[in-house]
Image 1 (cartoon, one colour):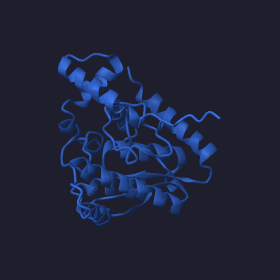
Image 2 (cartoon, rainbow, N blue to C red; image 1 turned 90 degrees about the horizontal axis):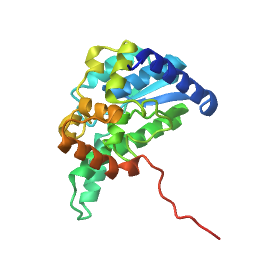
Image 3 (cartoon, helix red, strand yellow; image 1 turned 30 degrees about the vertical axis):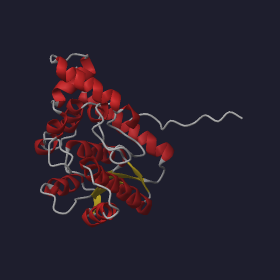
Image 4 (spheres, helix red, strand yellow; image 1 turned 180 degrees about the vertical axis):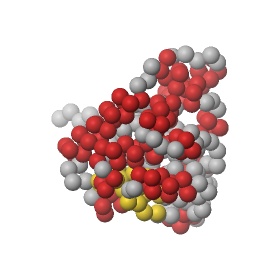
Length: 244
């Protein structure tokens, strides 16, 4: 049985220890999307460090239909925040690439804004003396549902070893509103939910990760294939070993 209170308290202590060793005097910089992962991450940081040492960055691309949830979250936590609209930057970069004659792909269109968001977080972090807190969870990372050098980047990752189901449980333990904790996961870029993109539910994935059980052999094969194909996102960059 997953003990949400114990794991929540452990994550809070871990964040506090990290900043006590590698971020003395720094604040936690968190990209706030309005989803459970960024909300739980920000709430954990606020409990660990105090609300004055957490800085939220809202990064819509143009008009974001659910940005009010992000605004509500920073209000609930009482943390400082800013809004950086990445539309002009993303559009300009993609347009410049198109102008070279290269044919734009769907993958480039979706991943590029995610990388711009990470660059934005590090720019803000440099201004406010912060450490960028990664918000990815284990379920997403397991099947590569993240952008390399985009939302997969960061200086510390409180949720990396927790599944979607477990993150939701911690969100409830933190007292976050159900509309945030139970919000349908989506990347905010492709126009589809995570589960629509993946082709299976997080409940199925989480059970497979934790118990090794999956009733559908087709889904099992797909999960295994995605995991193998995307291990490069979780591993250090291979380096040529120089031997003098």
